[in-house]
Image (cartoon, rainbow, N blue to C red; front, side, top):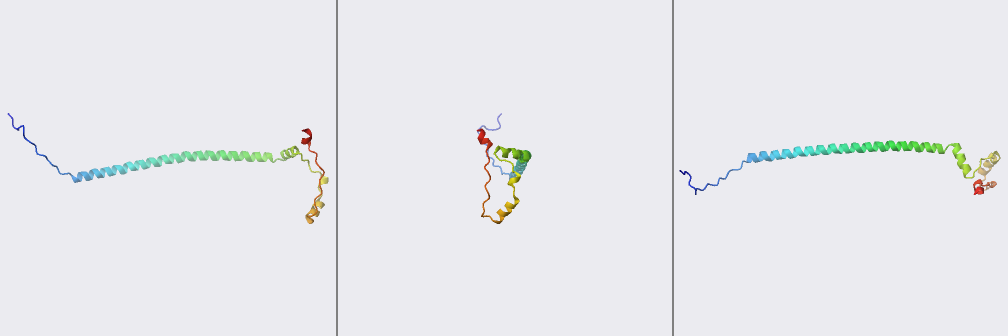
Length: 133
């Protein structure tokens, strides 16, 4: 026994859209986007803080290295300025130590008072390095 004829056509049913449900879905989507944006912002802040921490550590190491180099260079300068080192360098250039006969305080006073008088020429200094070459 057949109760529904085989050629029966069903009616097309048009449902009304639930506007409240659409508003709830849009609100949930907006809240989810805001929440995801907050997580992305927090992650970016965290990773930039880590990056700045690493850069700061590198700069502190560079500063320590530069302070050590400065200390070493100051020590080298002090060693190079010692009287013994200066004397050996001067002797290497052909200079000699000043004799007491070459120092005349009265001549300095005369030269300061009359600058047009040229100072007397010193005797030539033999260059020991030129003789050995």
